[in-house]
Image 1 (cartoon, rainbow, N blue to C red):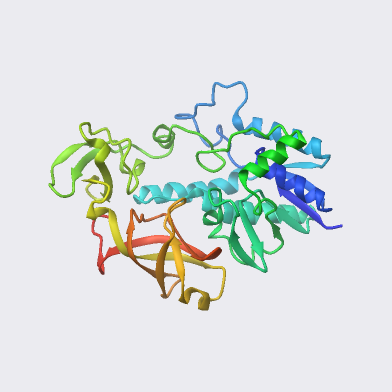
Image 2 (cartoon, rainbow, N blue to C red):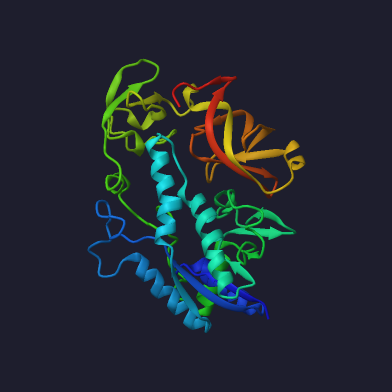
Length: 369
């Protein structure tokens, strides 16, 4: 009998993943990861859970315990607080300092869930690891999850082909509705639990207050990029991302004003009026840290890209460059943002992706990004 260790998060998806694997005849054990310590990591400001009798992370663990007891499987608890800080959170802060918009969930998958977690699982004798990701692995190819609204291949785009060996995604062929129905039928405490949000493994925070634990606020001017008029004051460039509309606190018709750029040297936030403003659009970008999940030949035709999670796929042309970089060309895309992931697809297959470095329009580098 093959042994599988499932990443049990205390959520409904991983609960059902473990249930399905046991039903399929695997020897199943669970592993709960503790990746954040509010005390050690000085997580004070912006943390709404400090006064609660039990923090959400401990509640998740308690739920994981109940699910594993229901399934009659062993649950291991492991601590990756240092690894998460070193490989995920430090990256997150460094990118913010550069004025970019990082995606810590992607790095968490690369460095934690499919690296140190997998190594620990092998130490415990696992033949496979499994998670509750909405994704599918078929014949060595990473495919989108059946539920288009929940597909998580975007967040798996930096995981290497080698890391995907001996990985199972049991819920990838199910919809979220089906998962909740199974959980309810089996009496899992997680059946109606809402999906986790916020930063991966850190959870819900008042983002601006939370960041002041680690980075200083440096207020500056908000400038209309077309008229060059000052419209107000920003609270710190790290709190804004390209395409953002809410939270500008300009007043008047601020609901029609969008962030279009940042000048890190002069601490200026650039905005423009209208959701179809030309300053929001680009036609190509350079991506780095390229992770290929298939041979380069696959990238030559009928490829599309997502420039952020939940964005629509856009047809692209890909040219491979040196040093793990690629040029991505497209007819027109909105709010392509340095620091975010560009993930490449061919129909349902995820071919990999990279991190957006520089953005261009009609061959000209956008000076305001």
